[in-house]
Image (cartoon, rainbow, N blue to C red; front, side):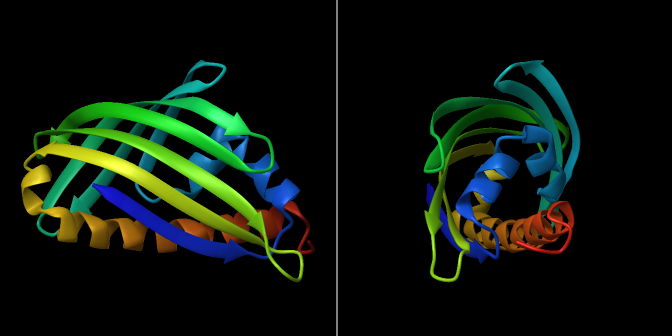
Length: 155
C-alpha cells in the first residue's frame, strides 16, 4: 500500500534537514514511539505502540537509512513484528522529501510503501491510511514545536 502525506513547517530546508539527520530527535516526534536503540551509524531498533480501531499492537522494528541526498531527501527501510497485542508484521520503505516554499518554509512530503500482515493487515487499507493521516498530523505538530524550540522561537 502506498501512502503520501505532506505538510509545511516554518523553518528553512537546511534546518529541517539537520533536524531529520538526528534520528533520536525525529523519533521523539513520532506518536507511539517508546524506545529507540542505536544499532549502528544509520541503523536503529524502534519500539512503537499504535491502535487502529479496536486493535492495538506494539511493534519492534529495525529501521535503516537506505539513501539520501543532502537537503533534498532521505529514504528509510523498516521491518519488524509485533511484540505485544495483535499479532502481525510490518515492512515499509519511507521517503522524506524537503522542498523550499515561499517565505522561507519547507514542504515535507512523506511517501511510504507499507506492507502489514496479521490482524492489522486484515483491517484494510482504508483504516490503515486513516491512521497514517492521524499519525502524520500529530508528527507534524510535534515537529513544528521541536523546530521552534530548537531555534529559540525564531527561524
